[in-house]
Length: 217
Image (cartoon, rainbow, N blue to C red):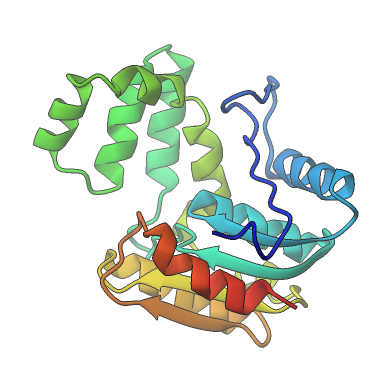
């Protein structure tokens, strides 16, 4: 849906799909990955990130990676205004399980932290798609690290100087709207768009027009 309007690059972040990994992880490593991709693609880019990918895109823009416009769908800053409900404990729990080789436990804990009902997790673990979930369990540590313990990194995001839109679903959990509003308030000139009836698993045909409108020169 975006290809008629842009040259589109969709990549596997480190530890996923066809991409490699390393023993040491930091947010700077992921930012460098994105910067290298942008350099290979021509030196600057319009960037759309979803969930932890949105947090990565925001951090990259704040660090000065050559992003000319940015769209972020529900970066998972889940903490409430008083700081409760963040993801610090969840990160540590997932990290411990991955370190112990318990990918099943790590994935289940992550889903539990995301609000998935226990009976749904049990069903998923018995289903044919669970091996894929297990495969993707180690990079969950990366996702949670990007979440800044669930707190919007307002001071860093204030450095972003490119047109930015945050997008949330009208039927998403309450944290999503708060996170997007918080990011929009932190980034100079940013705006927040709410898509009625959408959830964290936003429909492509619903979000694509917003991206085209915001990103197209």
